[in-house]
Image (cartoon, rainbow over all chains, first blue to last red; front, side, top):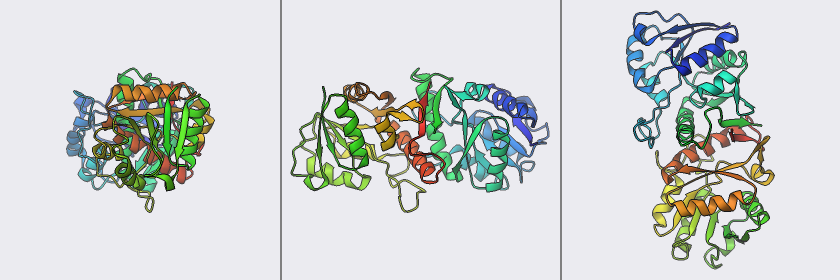
Length: 192
Length: 192
């Protein structure tokens, strides 16, 4: 059983927390208003917040997050134009977060799955697969174990540099869903 | 019926040509050794060649390609390291090609589908979907019509700027297939 803290109480936070709790893991949430005061107790910490909230969380919890697995799920879109990302070209929100939390093991995950496909554990008719990128093999394995033991599929997508590609997938998928070319219950699924 | 010229005779060239010919379209191939001498007769021209071959084709055919729909299918990977793309961060092979062929309507397509999933028209158990990005709406519609009338699905993935995201998807998918985390008959499929 993994001990997991989820920062955030929105749709993605609830979907991720629900799946992992359903898998028998110990899940606690920290709400927006508790950031900085509530202690981070889990070994895996999922930052299920919008991209602009990452900086404040990194500042508030840098010491407590040292040595922990920290999961960035954000899609750093310019939500006014839906036409670009707000991170530097070639970089990623996850790489920025890793730079701010050098003592933590930052992973990118869950940004290519919609809340509905996490909750249903299906993307259309296929199993939902969580793509996980990160530099620390043990950290990746810890998250992948928690995810797969909760009934989702998972793939090791490579080093944290691949977060750039995962954020590109998340970006494109969001633009297609917002443009009604994909349903929010579907998306880019891993097919075998 | 569309008139289509495919430059290239490799696995992807044959898969794309086979599908479109099977859909009743007029398909002609130009082999590597004929580049520069064979005339480009089609209205849609698919450059089914490796990324390093694009420059020579653009130079040889710039005049003949003016006004035509030119389809870039490349994944501009560093195939020695499989760890990066060789185009500038934030850009794409398709954007580079459009800059070299300003009088052509460049589209990005077919780079997120493997040859096997084009030939079988299935990604795993799902229909194969061709993601198409480009700036000219009529050009996109011409390719999408040719593709869908040949039994594949297609999605308008947005402007040519989205070629960056399509190339990121192609990149990640190739690394996963080469790493045996995905079969060459599967991949990232559009699920509804």
